[in-house]
Image (cartoon, rainbow, N blue to C red):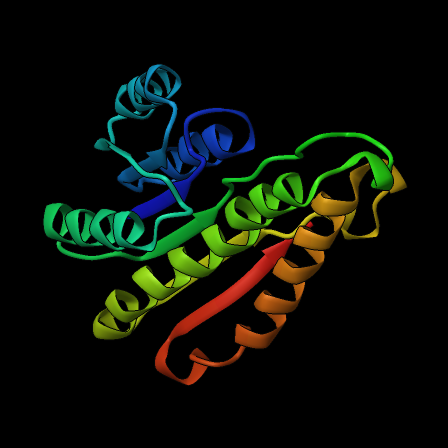
Length: 177
């Protein structure tokens, strides 16, 4: 079974469908109910089970509950794909507030952190797991996307730090630009 944060639409939705094509049941962890239902239908049409769990990735308890419910439903957690993220306000640096910066960091960085914290223990218990996070080459972004670039730089570092932390136990953490 796989959990895809931000799995309702866009890149996350495409990942959810691709995982279903590969024979995986998919948990769509997102806040977008209408879009998630459409993606869940596409997963089901491929013969795999889809479970939408409304999940705010900035809330560690909500993410932990999503992982627990997914594990209870499928008996295992094999894959985590972290796609939840926002670009935020595109504006010159001096026109961006600290609140705007904080919002991007909470979703893009803390969302990844919470997801790994919630899922890795289940993977270690099962002796196997793959975590993939969209790091984005935008960590080198334009001056109108400073919060996004900083957030993706942090995610890139996070993935690097965890990359081999659990590999001897069968759990790998990787990033994709």
